[in-house]
Length: 353
Image (cartoon, rainbow, N blue to C red; front, side):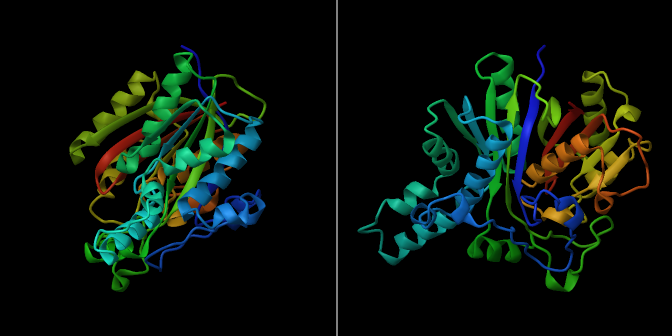
């Protein structure tokens, strides 16, 4: 079977991840309810007249996808696949507000057109004049994983050589209010949060956009080889270890051959039990976490995939991500495990390119 490589990465997050030296400036945050993305100067990438009509998630994705394509040296990919949990929430809210304020009459179509989840992939394709396969996955916390799986299959089937894959989610005021009411977001009295030993429900919410170019050929700049992805909608707590062990057996790997495991500890006491359970399988691996850097959101795994690629390429693990003190001379295999609120569990296996 042919290999699939991640040949470039770009990320806009609550960290300054567009900066080349962002490893030195990673700053954990545990004392606010909502984290905002560090946005670039959009004028450098998007004409102001166009930028005004774009929602935040479209602008973030346009910049991240541009950076990823530039790094890969590709002008036009064969396919564009985007994963998102909430889509263009800002324009969805504008459209619904418009419906209510105008008593469902005399509505302009603009907000509706821009509110659909596939607006992001469509806008990128329009900008690139890319007429290839264009698809959007909306599968909660496994949206990026489904997108990467689709891209991997396309490349292995010979239908594409280079695929632009992205994940993106933005915040909106109304949605954040509703998340607070449902206790999805941490109550202020429960802050600051201890991500690894939390005793309270809820998370700190983030946002961001991550893009990757997947290709069939390894390049000098390749970050990682995408070995395998597995997704399951629901698991009982006692099923998580067999789920991971079966995945490793399928890939002819022993637990000790996994050099680093990136776990999605979010500070939600109930759903974090899955990560605690999974970590017991890897006493000889570097255990890492990342949502204290990115916040929790539907496609937060885009940030962890971005960080895993950086770790594999640079062979350096940021101290701020470490759960244990296990040191490895070289990092060959990284396993990423994520879910959102105990639903949509995903495993991604990356190998050094």
